[in-house]
Image 1 (cartoon, rainbow, N blue to C red):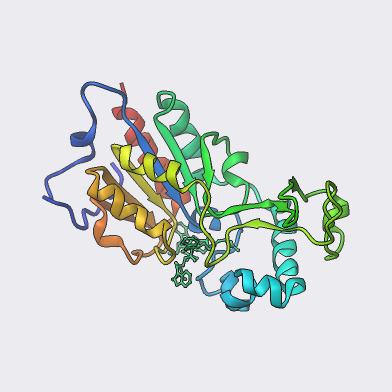
Image 2: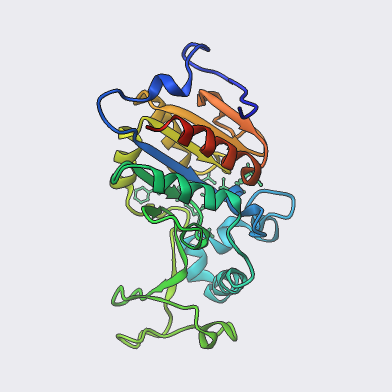
Amino acid sequence: MVSIQIVLAPSNTVTLADFFPSDRPLRVAVLTGAGISAESGVRTFRGQDGLWNGHRLEEVATPEAWIIDSEKVWRFYQERRRQLGEVEPNPAHYALAELEMRMDDGCFTLITQNVDDLHERGGSENLIHMHGELRLVRCEACEHKFEAMDPKHLEDDEFISCPECGHAKVRPEIVWFGEMPFQMTELQQAVIDCDLFLVIGTSGNVYPAAGLLCQAWESDSYCVGINLEPPLNVDLFHEFHQGSAGELLPLLVKELTDLLP
Ligand code: BV8
């Protein structure tokens, strides 16, 4: 049994098993943040060596920053794109792929705030990148979207022109602050419909992502969190496990799959 610390629950007697439906398959939704990729060597945003430490949000992750200093913004994403080639999925990514395989079709949705491709490389399939994908760029003139991971794209920090319309400077396919996250309707429905909502490796700082836990809780989902430290919205979990995702998530997935029919 994972060292479960019941933080706060409608009644501290509830357990995961109480939320398993008797008349239909279990529905699970998962939200991940930078913490799930930390053990793969991808820097988080707010840790001591966090990505934001070297930068101000406003200078690299807003539409205004792209207008004011697009070279600085482009360099920030090019550096992270190059890093994708140096990192691998960790046991936490593989555990979520294992859980997805055990679930009935249509009963598992993985929502990630992360823009890396480690969930895909770990085997996850039904995945929503609500804040975009580092591998992709988008033309602001014709909306053409394509991968920018060839050596010719990464060998320097020159802007990339659109191969479709010739527009001089494509942008990262990233949701910046002040922009609407992707697939909000779909991901919110998955959170409202789920019986179990897992939240892994996020500080709960950024909305609307951080608000999904409240939506799950209000929809009577059983909410379980794993994080190195209590996130800002820790009080909304029925169970909160403090520790590393790479160690605790495989244990939690094993406990959960043992309960599956
Ligand atoms: C929106 C892509 C409205 C970029 C990201 C003023 C104007 C406009 C909006 C706002 C505003 N003021 C506030 C807002 C809302 C704003 C917001 O929430 N701001 C915050 C800073 C207060 N949100 C937005 O702007 C969003 N859009 O509101 O649009 C709108 C409405 C209608 C029409 C149009 C628009 C958009 C937000 C998305 C921003 N883009 N990412 C990029 O990646 O470069 S956010 C980015 O930061 C991530 O995607 C992620 O969401 C967030 C980082 O959070 P975490 O993933 O939690 O990472 P963090 O480092 O914080 O924490 C990691 C955790 O892991 C830690 O707790 C650590 O303890 C733990 N950990 C570490 N190691 C491990 C571990 N845990 C387990 N195991 C380990 N090994």
